[in-house]
Structures are given as C-alpha cells and as structure tokens.
Length: 78
Image (cartoon, rainbow, N blue to C red; front, side):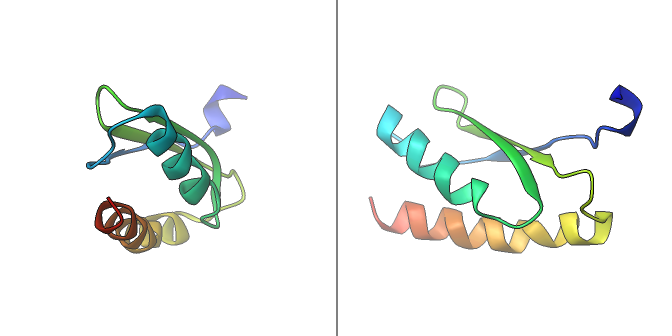
C-alpha cells in the first residue's frame, strides 16, 4: 500500500559522464543493505534510492555514510 511505502532518498551523484557510469553507480548503490530500488539520472546527477520496507529508519539514515564512500570511490576512479 502507498501509505506503507517509505519515502525515497534523493542524493546528488557527481562525476558521471555516460550511460556506463550510470549503470555502475546503480549497481554499487543496489548492493547497499536496506536499498530495495535505485534510479540514477545522468542529466540531473541525482540518484533516487527506495528503502526496503523492512529497513528501520535509523539503519536508513546510516546509509549516507556508505553511499558517500561509494561516491568517493566512483569519483576517484574517473
């Protein structure tokens, strides 16, 4: 039900230059525990993450540290 669906988390993702970059970021973010779906937009440099319904809010908030590490890894490899 829509009322039980957790709000998505929107994050800026910099350093992407092509569709291949988008797929790589999507794969990395999809591996983060607690993330149920990922959409990355190259034009807006944004990622939208959907939290799994079973993920507690405090776990969801701690994801930002893992995601920052992924972004740093991605940006450093270009």
